[in-house]
Length: 430
Ligand SMILES: [Zn+2]
Image 1: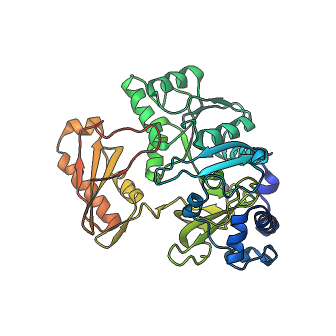
Image 2: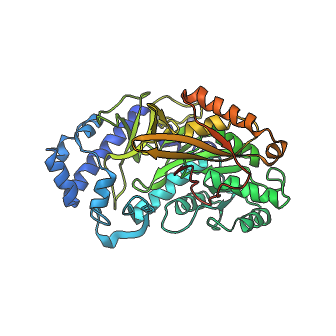
Image 3: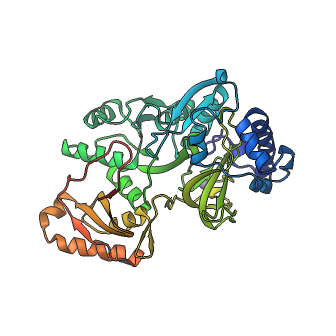
């Protein structure tokens, strides 16, 4: 490792060599799943693809996609490609929209996970002398475990506090001298709010310098707020249980999201036709795990919308770059013919002085017609000033300037929107 790169051989490998490595790994992967798993074999046979047909990276397009529906069908262990006896760790998603997604890991998979997380956290700026307060929820979720493995591999100290018990988070952060916080961005803001209520100044009364955030869609404007509120640098992590958990994509100090592409091959497709798109075009992210053993995913459709770039970055990494996630295609709303993502409304609200970080988008459905309104908490000071209709009008104008759509905004009393210790619920249906 160098000062800047955890694994300079891989992270600054010429793109051509990286693609050769990906192809070599892809060939091996396809032949492994074909030999080891009857469902994968059938899928490939049905598509008339034999492992030997994979001769270039582009040949991946011959392989059918893997969807959430497939994962449900083969729940829990139908797609495992090793002996069950080789599995040493299991994680799972919450399963809010059906059966949970199960992530089984062999010893090598666990090792890989620690490695890609260490690489990601190192790129964020974490070092051995850091103390990471791990405020992601421990349990079946991948989040807390992935961050723990990576931080420990770097040699940092991990405080395994989990989420919740916010007053205690503050005591621990102060007493143990945490320098890094790992949680959802919205939970970090809630912790800051409770710290302030207890007479503490998040910027000056703590040693925090870095936030490693994920598991939630958040806008650049929200990032700026988090950074100011805590006086830290905030970095985004992107990952999925279906792929490995966190560790798939994270940021360098230039805030470019690098994909750990030696292990995770990304494609962008047209969500409607399934056709592969070129770098620079926006579409749905699709991931293939190139080296995972227990539960390899080939062409998993994430439903997340983003753009890929193959530009080199100022940081020296050649690993391809992914844009911020524009939104999950599931979160996309169509209102009076206009496509709306919650992140666009968030970005508009954050432009308005006197608006806090707490808001909710209210989605109302009458027959086939969807309408939206927004409830937002002003800051305490702004609330006391009154004339809230001015603030509402400003927020409506900002939303209109982004979406060309009139969305009514209601300013509501501070601290009325429920706070979350995990993923904030930004859209509610009434
Ligand atoms: Zn970079």
